[in-house]
Image 1 (cartoon, rainbow, N blue to C red):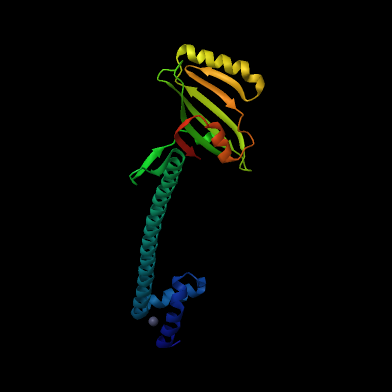
Image 2: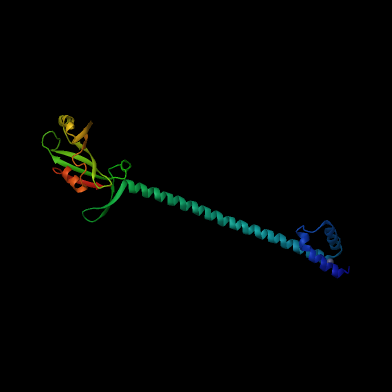
Length: 228
Ligand SMILES: [Zn+2]
């Protein structure tokens, strides 16, 4: 083969040679030519250099991509953390506090006085009230905390009362009356714990919400109503 013609064949083969795609015989042919042909040797060197450079470049690109990926991952994690914390904080606030407007029109945060985990799907109304009773009380009043449960049909399904403000003698006398009167079915399940008196007030059972509240609070002075 003439040298020039051989060179052009060799150069056609070089890309495959570099990628190790040529047979052993072809390799021998190429290598023996290159030993005697500086031009082809130079071309081979250049081609190898190009490939190395390409490999380096692609490595750099991969590293850059990895960096971007890592940055994105860190950002995602930070975002998820902040998001979760916000949800937890909102849930905590929702369960324990509410925003209210005072008499002057100013917004303020109010802490719930009722444990929301006690509530099912029913609506709960908590009323704080007082009733004048000169004897047997410390300051002339009995103080009530009343939990009214309104069911899905908007009827009162139960009322639990807590009374306080009695003298030691007064609370015992009141408890005795409740216990004795239990057979009437209106006030049932009385319990005396420390200076508090608890019982079920069944007088409003089955009544509409408004009617129930009015019945229970007929002789009392409302201090505060909260609905949940
Ligand atoms: Zn050559």
